[in-house]
Image 1 (tube, rainbow, N blue to C red):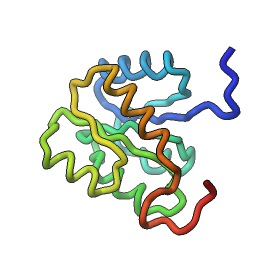
Image 2: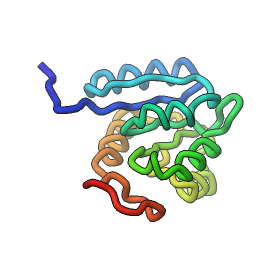
Image 3: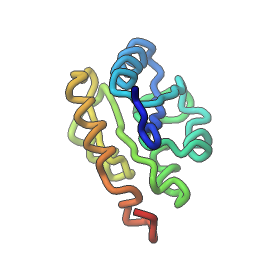
Image 4: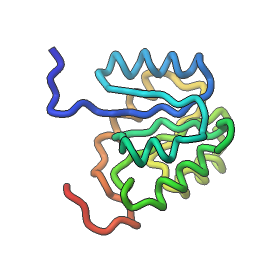
Length: 140
């Protein structure tokens, strides 16, 4: 009987079905509510509308890149509480720095171990909401 005051909402923005299936499996087992977009188009609007607790965001997406999505979300003060974990197959240190510089809360390289992803998700969800420098005041 899972009865949290509010279940965590996670939006997965991932174009590769096999990775999305693995994420679905993991997130479901962890008790999170989730939805998925398979393209970057419409991601920013969905994030603004739903304001998920966490976005698992692929870097290389059709139509709009994960970097562009992250930058747009971070530029919107209404989305200050949305946490972002970027995922990429190009896991160089430069890619990581770029993602974090654009406002991502975390960065994970594919392929990832499910245990590593689970730990990253928990760690990011434990961060204080609206901890971004661009944000004014927020309810803690």
